[in-house]
Image (cartoon, protein in one colour):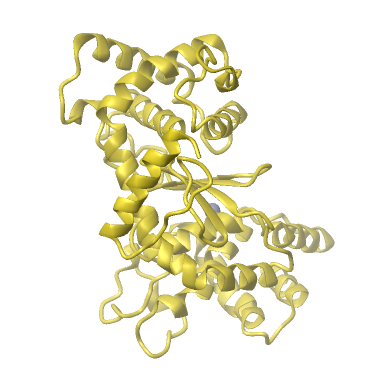
Length: 368
Ligand SMILES: [Zn+2]
């Protein structure tokens, strides 16, 4: 174990004392373990990258107008302007030019769909244990990024490490500690159940989860090949038990391909237009339904009915019932109402073992 790792181990031990979770042993100084199913990272460069992107977005579209074109406003995150200790003029200049670079080059691009941003994110994840990206002091820390970008990130890193990173790292670690007991108890069972439902195998390797103060506009996103989840530790939609559902929803992006293929196949056979997002509504619905009984404190989780579908998941008198994400966040209300009906009528029987996978998909597509 290297000195840096020993320091971080002490941090984690301190955390374990503060919380009932013994998330101690770790693969690297930024990773957590040993938890089943997921491998959590609070990586310095990934967090810096997303913070720069967030501040560039803010600069480009002030909060009042940021809602336009987005289903949800940007979350309110502490920026460098809110840093507890004042920045020196040199630090201010370095940070501002890095944000300006992100505003000019990345803020208009989507973290989930833009290939440059995906590759950059993955590369920064792989170099999380490096203090630099240029390999000037340590050859193995040459991340191979374009020289200008390396300079921008390294200049911003000094400011970030001094002013924002300690708080963000703490928030990330708190978030992992909060969700860890559920993963410990239920993670394997849920992963097996979801893989069964999607008629596939859960990945053998643990799924890497980048825990970041900011993720993207939706609070979490998943990129494939390699399968990696990025999740915001500060987004209000990802807090408490809800974090557990968001994690499994995101992971499902990596295993639900058979559903998407089956929907496309059935549509082609029937000469029907392929419904946009039906597969996505399906994985929201499925994760919610699989997890709901575990997180519901009442004796029994009542079935989802139309009356449960209220904007923002406000459902008076059913507090003891866990409200799945798609209902809570009003996703069905915003254009997926027909999908919810299809899923309740034709997909739920499959979840209840009263229909086969193929029949459920075929019936959903016929009813479109
Ligand atoms: Zn999704």
